[in-house]
Amino acid sequence: MMKKNFVQRSLSSLVLIPLTFFFIIKGSYFFNLFILLVFLTVCFEWHTISKKNPFYFIGFIFFVFSFYSVFYLRNEINDDYSYLLSVILICIFTDLGGYFFGKIFKGPKLGKISPNKTYSGIFGGYFLSLVFMYSVYEIKLITSQYLILNLNFIIFVLLLSFISQAGDLIISYFKRLAKIKDTGKIIPGHGGLLDRFDGMLFAIPASYILLESKIFY
Image 1 (cartoon, one colour):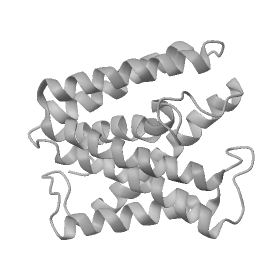
Image 2 (cartoon, helix red, strand yellow):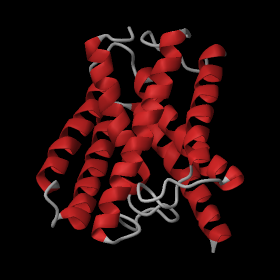
Image 3 (cartoon, one colour):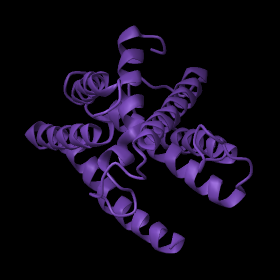
Image 4 (cartoon, one colour):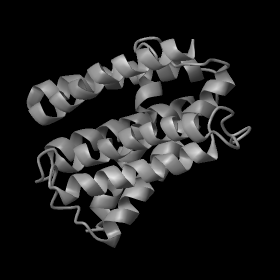
């Protein structure tokens, strides 16, 4: 069962990640339509899992801000897609680091916070996102005028990795309240879009706030 789930997750990621990158790089109405469809799906999944909890309407307000941040970072800053793509890559490799380090090293779990997650997975998320992003910027595979290889870059990556993992835990908390495993079934091995994009939905608006506040730039 675990092997089957891993294969499903891997195949889904091989389709979903390049597809997401395609729309981000392509931009224009392709990207806007893609974001709109994701937004509507996420809102529907949120409605399904949280219609009986007191954060129901707050969740919708947050998602509006989150997806506005996605739209703004892609279409309104003079950096094309590099900054947004960097934030998404941080989230992806945080997730990968958490998954593989957790499976390989195991160790103590977070307990009630998230029964299936381990402290080794948390460390793995920080480690892999930082190593990967540092390497990407070192070889100039991606370059953004807002991100330069220095101490601020390291803090930025680790902070967004933390927020991404916190977002994952927050959505997991609401799933436990609803007594469900996944927010949907649209992505084999992952569940719903809210399962897949949970960390990004928190990290992207955080990166928008950091950009506007000029804390790191």
